[in-house]
Length: 272
Image 1 (tube, rainbow, N blue to C red):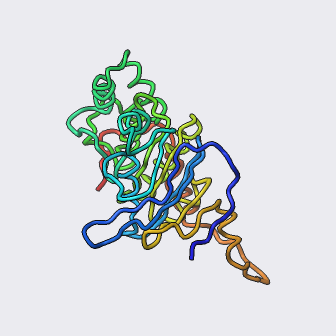
Image 2: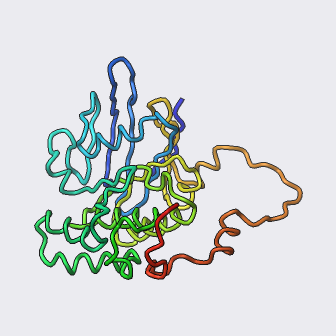
């Protein structure tokens, strides 16, 4: 039985109603409903095989649905796919950067492929926004996992798409790299971008999302803010709690704040 947390009426950047998808005799999506508010981060949680990536592929016009309807930026995914593609950017589970090019060259290349004016200025602006300016002249092959992921997200923003899909963007990253990517995602929303984030990491959803949905066995079983979801369970009565530092507190205390420009890392920033 689906648990539904009431949602206030608001404009929707993404609307999904009754989406279904099967692969041969395996039904992956069994009637998914979603509504995502513009300028927010919406996290879609689910275990492996829950259908998260399948839903993202449908919304990004890479895969047709078997049933139901969906709109992105008020364009119908099935009947207006070209308009949907103009409104979105998709960052998959693995960074799609050219490691033989420098960070700056990757950005300039994408800007030129999109026929934008002043590709050099666009590249410089994005390098600065994602704290990669000092590493812009280095080949992407020398970047750490977090830096490479941030470059990948920066490339996705070229052309200023109002909606971006991030499909498990921190998979395989170390804790420091994950924190770097979290900071980059928060910057997207500060700039007005709508983010649909799929993840298996519960702490990632807690850190980033204004609204969270859980996809299980092809259906959304709960959808609400973190506070609303917590209210679905009775509070535990605790007489005394001694607050212990979190692992993140320990990690950041020991290694320091890594939000500064990665140029200090030199060419030895490649993950081991």
